[in-house]
Length: 362
Ligand code: HEM
Image (cartoon, rainbow, N blue to C red; front, top):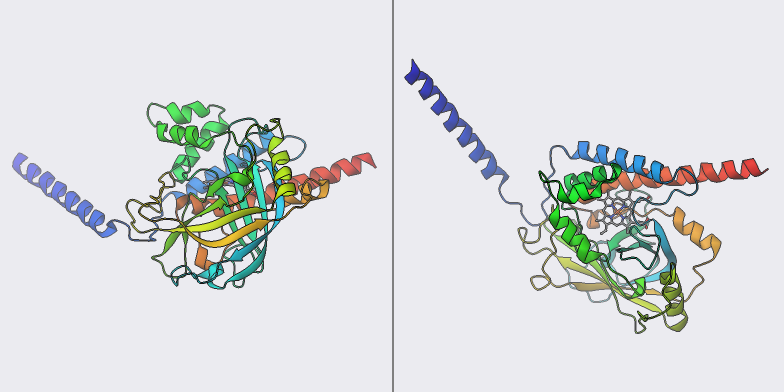
């Protein structure tokens, strides 16, 4: 009897191991450009959105509701986005398929600080107009790029980002880093290296940190980077104060136009350059960034009240995109609805508050 039971248990164990091995083998390592969607991703995204909305409501119980991330806008600029001539065939895709000039709009922001003297990440959001083709989200005709001033994101994937949002909501971010059962020391390290004092957002290099398709073939993926190519650089020893980045940008424009190289980095190895881990910096020796366009900003009055309020109403979303540049990876997948919903929420609330203020004052 005991022998039969042992035999049965042994059989079950063998079947279980075989099943597990077949599943692992058929999943295999991901190929170039291949996404792997976690089973619970929808759930994670819903939870994240609820918490982000709750935190925003708590932070801005009155007055203007700012963006959840990149809340302090430093300026919005009209710009020219010129796609380079003679690009190699493998880069001549989507927006980059035709050389020529597009009108664009660029917003710079502080990721989390209101005082420009504090160490922080800076954000750069680019909207290119006059783009032929259907957009994956939003209105046709525009292509957005959303970037940060460090090549890696502190969170590897949506689950990781959700842990951070949960800790933020509970007002104990340190728990996210040091929770003994699920510590995020690598995230702490990334943030330590990423947060810096800067002399001007115009002098920096920015990275998408997350990957995007290049063309309609499922095997081509890239990350973006935008790097200053201006002849003029702001002085770090300038007059440093709460809003000094705005002043530095104004001074730059009065002296010389602003120039940025817009570049792509092709994924050449799916293991060392993963799609689903935004914490990994893709090696530039393995695959260098290649320039595909130039972004220029001429002198303009970006500090007028109207220009600032129009800028704050804008919405940038990585999914405002041609299919040829489809956002890839879990972080990008969950951003789609979160950005859409949060932009709608903040603009609706701000409109209601503005209307009620003007109604009260009548
Ligand atoms: C799961 C990951 C992420 C979440 C949940 C998230 C969430 C958000 C939210 C809610 C906003 C405000 C949207 C609005 O009100 O219009 C925002 C803005 C922004 N985020 Fe993220 N973000 C994530 C990842 C990233 C990454 C990977 C980058 C770039 C490397 C980035 C850069 C920015 C920038 C530059 C803005 C400002 C956009 C603008 O100018 O309107 N974020 N993010």
